[in-house]
Every structure is written in C-alpha cells, then in structure tokens.
Image 1 (spheres, helix red, strand yellow):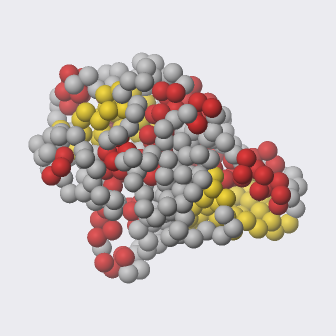
Image 2 (spheres, one colour):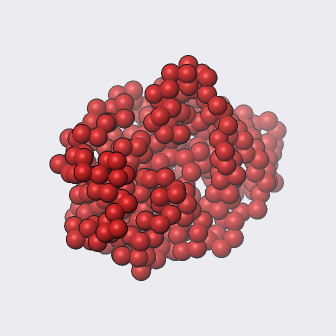
Image 3 (cartoon, one colour):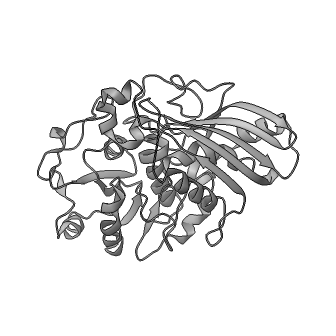
Length: 356
C-alpha cells in the first residue's frame, strides 16, 4: 500500500507531537509537512521543543509552515498533500479545516469545533463506523470525539443490547488533557490543580448520545456527566453506573466486554489494538496506561508500536442488582483519546476505500 502525503496541523502541542510520533514510521501515511503558529513558522522540526516523555523519534527534515499564512492551502496543494491531521485549538480549526477540505485535502480532526456538524462524521471506529458513510466526496472532513468519551463509550456500547436507561459518569482527567503547560506547573503536579473543566461535561454528554444514535437522531437515554481535572500526567479514568431496561448477569457483562471487536476493515488498520477492550479485575492507573488490548507495557514506543495505548481498560465491575451495573474505564487521553484515535479514523477511511 502506498504512503499518502500528509500534513500535521500542530507543531509544538502534545497532540500534534503525538501525531508526528505516530506518523514517522506509518505504513499508510507519510508526513511531508507540518504547520504551526506564526511563532514556530520557519523553525526546523527538530528545533521545536519536544514535549512528550518518550524520546523524540527521527523526524523528517521539515521546516514548520505558517498555518496563518494566506497561501498555506496553496502551499500544501503544491506539495501534493492528500491528508491533513488537525491537532490544533478549536478556534483555529474553525476556518482552516473547511478550507483544506474544500481544496480536496481529506481532513481528520481532533479539534472540537466541527463535531456534530452536518456532513462531518463524528466517529469512534468500534462504535459507529457506519457514520463515516457521511464523509463527503467533495469536501472530506471527519472528527474524532472528545478524549473523555472513550473510556465511557467503548465499554458501555458493548452493553447497548440490554437497553440503556440511564448513565451516571464521573471523570478524573489528566493534566495533559489541558495541554503541555500544566505538565510544567509544579503546583499542579503537586495536586494544587483547578478541578473545573468548563464545558467538558456538556460536550461529553452530547457526543455520547450522538455516537450511540444514528446520523440524524441521537440516542435518547438519560446521561448525567461530571468531569474534573486531577493531578496526574496522563490517563483519563471514568467511574460509571448504568441502569438498564432489561436484566443482565455478571457473566453476560464479562462476555460482552471480552467479546467486543472491531469490524474486519478496522481490525486491519495499523493502529487498531488487538482488542478494543482490555478487561482487568481492578484498574491501576500507573500499570494500565499503555495497553495494546493484549498486554501492558511501561516502556512504550508509539513511533514503532502503533497499537500500544490504543485499547480501553475496563475493570472494577460490580453488578449492583439485576438492572444496575458499576464499572470503571481508563484510557490514554493523548493516544486513543486524541492523536491515535484520529489516526485510526483516517486508517478506517483508507481500509474501507473511502479515500484513495
């Protein structure tokens, strides 16, 4: 399979660098350009401060392009870019993403601005892959979901056939979800962090109902969502209680979790973990951050192992009564919840023949 010429929008942020890390050896996409702020423009990529804990991989010899330049789309077309991975703030994504898509560059976005917009599929590949049917042939753009949604939605989806009546979720979200700055804030690292995340609960609830519904009609179960920031570097954990319309047993729950699979087309993707869910007795936020769906590691190298960090961990499973279940979900917020999830969405589009 050929490597499609690609651009990463985002040179110095955590998600942009996660995407660079994942693309450097990717078999289906070739990173031939990186765009950044006017402050970074003209800087060689290897001179941009590396903000991830893993060692910087051997990145291509690229000079950061100015995302704010009037002719940036024309420059990318001259470079024959076919795919754009957007890892930029929402207020910047608002204008540049549609311009790229209208120029025929397929845009796969981690930004929130265009989520749930008409003709812009919002997709979790193991939940609503069919929503990618809405991908436009003329102005192709698709969005990955909010990072907090993954550890809730993936386990919950496996139980959908029992009839979801009400969901209550409380999150504990890592510092990296707010960007690299908090990771350099000693007060935050010591625990003095503002727990408030404005708009996060509303966004998570709306996206949950969207991906569980059809392309025209969201799901109609009740969802009570509370989100808060906590003092850890990476990993979003959610604590969930679900009320169902039908009876279920613990064994049925365990079978549903263990049996969850991607479609054949998605499972063939380089970033697809061996299984979408990794079931454990009890979640350990240190030991269970990096999983490929089969095994955990504490020495990840996402530049050569695209699967690691891509599975959602589920544990602490308690059947309260015949129609009420508690569980905890956990996932890497900048991998499956951001760069990795966005890349998997693009891989799905390739695997299903939606982009050449």
